Length: 207
Ligand code: SAH
Image (cartoon, rainbow, N blue to C red; front, side, top):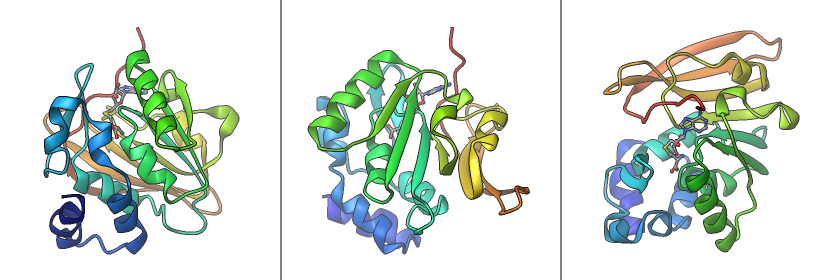
C-alpha cells in the first residue's frame, strides 16, 4: 500500500526527487494516525490526528519536502512549525542531519514524542508557539510550517540562514491559502514565490 501510494500519488504527480520518494517509502505513515484510521493511512487525503488537527495528504508532504530542498547537501538543519503527529518530522529526519519541531498542543506533542522515539527518530521537540521560532537553535537551512498563518512570522524569516528556504501556507481564508516559498540569498535578501493553493489547519496563537 505504501509503495503504491508513492507510485500513484507522488511520482505520478511529478515529484522526481529520488531521496524524497525513498523517505516516503520508508516512514510508516500508518503508525502516525489513530488506530481507527490506520487502514486508510495511504489514501490520497489528509486524516484526523486528534485535537481537531490533521496529518497532511501524502502528496503535500512530499511536495513541501521537495520545495524545501531537503535533499540538497546544504540543507542540514530544519525547523518545523506544527509537529502534529510527527509524520512530516520523520520524513525530514530521513533526509537532513537535525530536525527541530514545535507544537502548540501539549497532547499532540507528547504523543508525537513517544511515537518518534519508539520508531527510533531523534528529533528535537518543543511545546510552544512556533511563531517565535527556536532562537537558540537558529539559524536553519530550512523552515517548514504546516499550519496556515495570516502572514509570514518575522521571527521565522530572521531565523533562516543565508541560502535558506522556507515553505509556509499563508492566508486567512480557512478554505484556501497560498503555499509560499521564501528564500534568503547569501546577502540576506528575501524573495517570495507562490507555489500552489493549499488548505491547512490554522496557525493558532497561544491562550
Ligand atoms: N506536520 C504535521 C501536521 C499537523 S497539522 C503532521 O505531519 O502531522 C498542524 C499542527 O500545527 C497542529 O498540530 C497544530 O496544533 C499546530 N499548530 C497550530 N498553531 C501552532 C503554533 N502557533 N505553533 C506551533 N504549532 C501550531
